[in-house]
Image 1 (tube, rainbow, N blue to C red):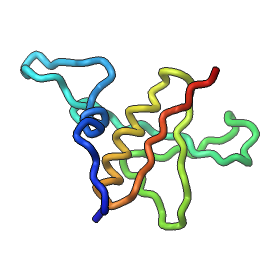
Image 2: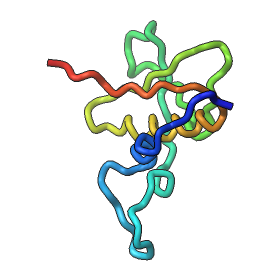
Image 3: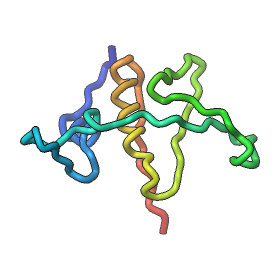
Image 4: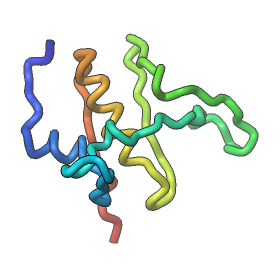
Length: 109
């Protein structure tokens, strides 16, 4: 079990959808876990020079980090859909007892 807790305001952020969305049969705003579909992700390393030549995909719904201390980064263009998998995986691994870091992209001037 983790020795820390997630503030309610951050939990609200982790479970929210960027654009508030409603369902015709619900009176409340939908949560991310109600609409989220895990994507297949492309895995590559810093050694890979040509991203187009790498074709190792994995299902992020079944992904569990190993115990070797490897780190994973989700990258992509602006508004390409990086935040939702990060939020979803953060909560998933928190439930497994992992200590996660959620680091938004720094502002570049």
